[in-house]
Length: 240
Image 1 (cartoon, one colour):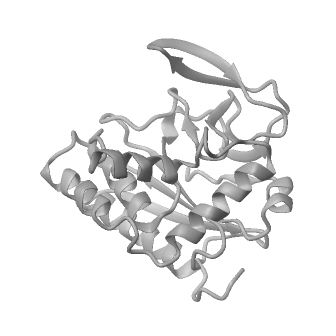
Image 2 (cartoon, one colour):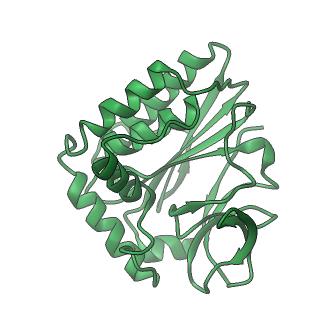
């Protein structure tokens, strides 16, 4: 059954312009990083500012983090963290073919992109503002650790607990995509002024990359914004 994420109303109260593209992949295949996936990463690092909305989109995410009490200079959104690493090292670390694919697209489109092993989810993913008692599994100095979110923090979670803290800052260990993952869920997260057309284009590139890795993969897309959810993605960038 396809993953159908939900977004709580308080998220749109915080950012009415927020829109997400959810992509579920079934019978997918992954593999170790290879020359192709490393080339995707390298080319993306060379095109950090090719998207004309890049700097403004990053600024919108920093503003959003401050709005729910986070400090983006300490815990930046996922794409800003990737960009900083690319600027510092000139390259991003290769992890596996699927993670390399969506990290490359994240950097190229200046867009937070998350990937999860859907088979390890308990219930459907949902984006909420935390109460402060939700568990989050992570690693600190090489040792497994359970943290809790701060009250009001924006988090992705399932029935078990948090899967990603501070909207898209840090992913948990439990649901990470590995080389053995075959059911995958991706979420691409956009704020103004990034065009909706660009969000959809990034989604198309992700699906193309998944099909390159596995011809048998089946994908389904779900577009979510303040107006609701739709299996029909918008046709123009004019939709809010």
